[in-house]
Image 1 (tube, rainbow, N blue to C red):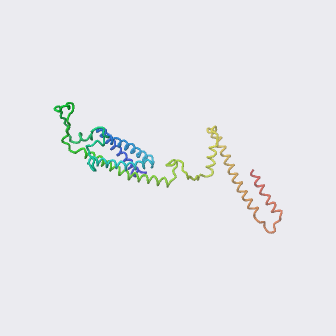
Image 2: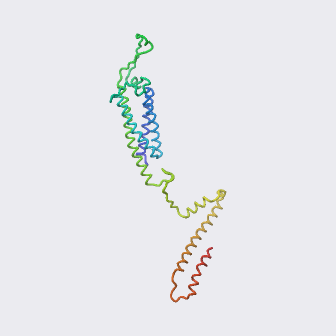
Image 3: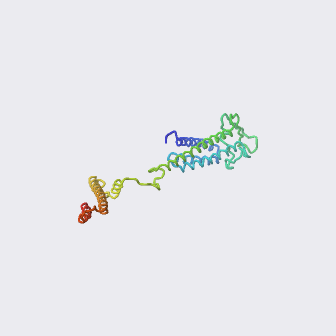
Length: 276
């Protein structure tokens, strides 16, 4: 396959997905978002599996990747609904952290243009060691940044799903149309051996020849010539035998003496014995 085919495009898409997933994993680690961290980890593994299957012509791995892309699209739709507070979801909940901490997205305090200020709360009793953190001047809210990340992941996953289905269909057609030696199936069930008789004879001789004669090229050539001559003599003997049988079955000419017919019948064993 050329470099401008669906296979090369799928390799490019898997590589792009892998880079985008690694970038997202870093920022989820910084924000202690445990649910997205686990999802990104599974996504990275499946993308690597799909990339390996595309490079090594393994349709089953690509099928696994295609199924996962559907799950990945569903997960990212949930993330979009979570940050946009659709369907009763709240971006301030602790759902993505498994209720372990109250951390939010890393972009909530480190977004573009955001200024983070800390105000001490020493005037309040019991809160001497705490401080109030305020974020102002953000050019873009963090929830929209997360939505853009998820939207980009959905876009790549949908395109990857389409190309994965296309590549699987191409691999399946090639596997059904051609009989590859050492290809997809190294041991095909229906393989017709169409080698000539002399090649099969030579292969059998090479298989049964002792390993001690592997370095004796002269001995091997001489034995092979003798076997070839024996094979040719056997073939000629079979042809003479068929010719004799035809002559014996044929009717004698009118007026031909009986003695000539008997002598003609007796000539066949003599011809056979001459080649023994």
